[in-house]
Amino acid sequence: MLGFLPFLLFAIVCHAWGPLSGLAAGALSAIALVGHQLAGGRSAKILEVGTALLFGGLAVYTLISGAQWSVMGVRLTVDIGIFLIVAGSIIVGRPFTMQYAQETVAPEYWDSFAFREINRKISLVWAMAMAAIMVADALLLFMPQLPHALAIGMTVAALAGAASYTKLKTS
Image (tube, rainbow, N blue to C red; front, side, top):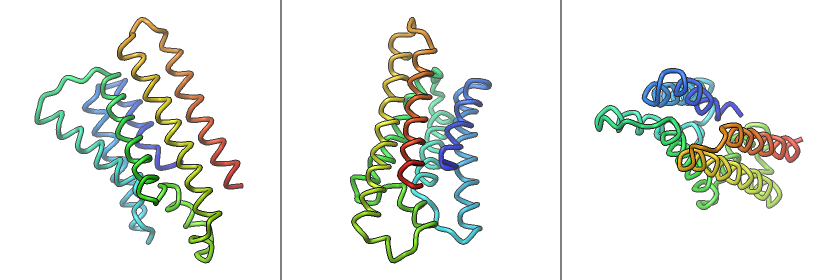
């Protein structure tokens, strides 16, 4: 769950100080997470590395191009990016959750069908949650007359559902 901290910081800072500040906060917190992993003797996780590249790349693009993002526009772009990271990890056969699971599961189980299948399913649930959040963001971006509570509810439900499913499958 710590891997999603940069997205939380991005959302908070973006709403308070604007998209560029939010992107910078997301990038810096993701870089800090990667540094913490490496300093602790653990491997850098695809989620944090991808997040650092996503936020950092968007921040640099914004600085260089002078892009004037709307809050919903930048949120949708970020959510598409995280969806691509999560879905891409599944497509290449290394679901992003496996790196976290390998820190708590004995190495002799890593190649088992059950271990791989559980991680594939958990990662798929997170991909579906990100897809739901993208829909919520798109609704507000393209239909701003809709109540923000609808998108907030969709986002909270998607994240809570994915977190609950993860907890159920890892208990």
